[in-house]
Image (cartoon, rainbow, N blue to C red; front, side, top):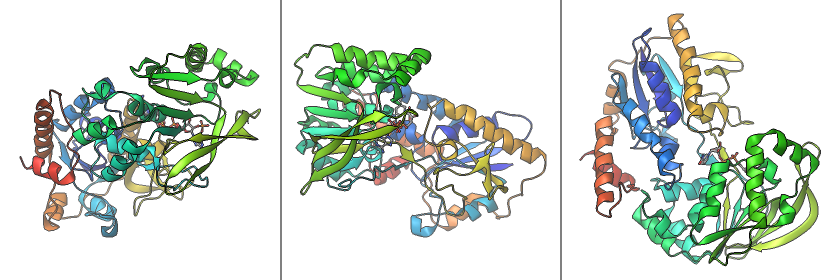
Length: 452
Ligand code: NAP
C-alpha cells in the first residue's frame, strides 16, 4: 500500500511512523511538504528559546530514516493558481490513501476597528519571522521592532507568552538559540520597554500553562506587573481554581506577581485581565489600543462594562489562536475551520471520502501539546488500516506514480538526503557563531543547501 501524508509537522510524522510500525499491511509512506524542510510547527512554531521542546525534532527526524518512509519537500499540494504542483486528484491517482496533516497556519482576527493599521500584526507572522520561516515578512519586522517602544500582545495563551518573552528578553538570553542572525540583529535594536499582555477574561480562564507562564517572571531585564484588582476572583472562578489544579496553579502565579514590589528593571511586562481591545488608533501606524474593562457573566464569558482606557502601543501582536484553511478538492467546515471527519476518515456531507484521512490541527483545531498529535495520528491510522483490510481503498492508477509526475512537472523535490544536507549546513552555520545551529531562512538558500 502507498500512502501520501500531506504535511510534515508532528501529526504527519507521527502518522507515517504509525503506518510503518505495524505488520498487518506492508506500507510505503511519502511525507509531502510545501517547504524544503520538515517538521512544521516544531521548526516554525515552537519558540527558539524552548530548546527542550524543539528537540522533539530529533525524535521526528528518526522517523524519516525508517524503511518505507520518504520525505518529499518543496512539493505544494493544491491548484496551480495557489502555487500547487500536484492536486488532490493527482495524489489519489498515485496513492491508495492520502492523510491530510497540513495544520492550521493562518491567524484568527479580532474584528475591531484599526486592526489593519501598520504595526498591528498577527502572532503567526511574528512567530514565523523569529523562527526563520521562508515566507516571513523580514522587511516588516526589521522596520517595526527597532522603532517600537511599547507593545500590546492580545490573548493569554502560550503563543502570547512566547511572543511576550521574545520581546522582553535580552539578546544575551536568546543567544544560544537557532534564530537567524538577522532576527538577533533586529531584536538587539529594540527599544521596547513595556509589553502589555491582555486577557479578555480573568486569570482562571487564561489558556496558558503554568510552566510557560512562570518563565515570564524569570527574565533578566524584565519584571512582571499585575494590578491587584485584576486577580481578584469572582465566585465561579474561585470554584474552578479550587477544583482544577492547573487553573489553581496559574492563578497562584499571577496573584504572587500582583504582590511583588516593583524591581525597577528596564523592561516591564504588564499582565492585564478583564481587558479587551475594542479599537486600535493611529495615523500612519498604530499608536494606541483602546481597552474596555470587562466582567465575567454567569457562564464565564467576557461582557463589556463601558469603562475604557487607552494604552500606548506602536506594535500590536494579535495572538488569539491559529486557523485552518481549506485545501482545494477537500471538504471543509468553515465554521470550525477544520476538515470534517469521523475517527479521522474525511467526510463530505456525512459520507466518507474514499481513501482520504485527516490528523492533527486541521482535524481537531489548534489545541493541545505536541504529544497530543501522536494519539490523534494513531486514531487516524487505525481507521485507515481497517479500511485497507476491508478492501475499501482504491489502488493507484498513475503509471510511474508520484516520482514520474513530479519529474514531468520539473519539481525540484527535496528528499530526506536533501534535508540532511540542509541540516548539516545549518549546523555548520551555527558553529561559525558558537551555536549548535542557525536556521537558514531563505528558500533559495535552503534549496541550494539541499543540493549540497
Ligand atoms: P490558545 O491557547 O487557544 O489561546 C488563545 C487566546 O486568545 C485565549 O486567551 C483566548 O481567550 C484569546 N482570544 C481569542 N479570541 C479573542 C478575542 N477576540 N479577543 C481577545 N482575546 C481572544 O491559542 P495559542 O496561544 O495560539 O496556542 C495554540 C496551541 O498551541 C495551544 O494548545 C497552546 O498550548 C499550544 N502552544 C504551546 C506552547 C508551549 O510552550 N507549550 C507554545 C505555543 C503554543 P478566550 O479563552 O477568552 O477565548
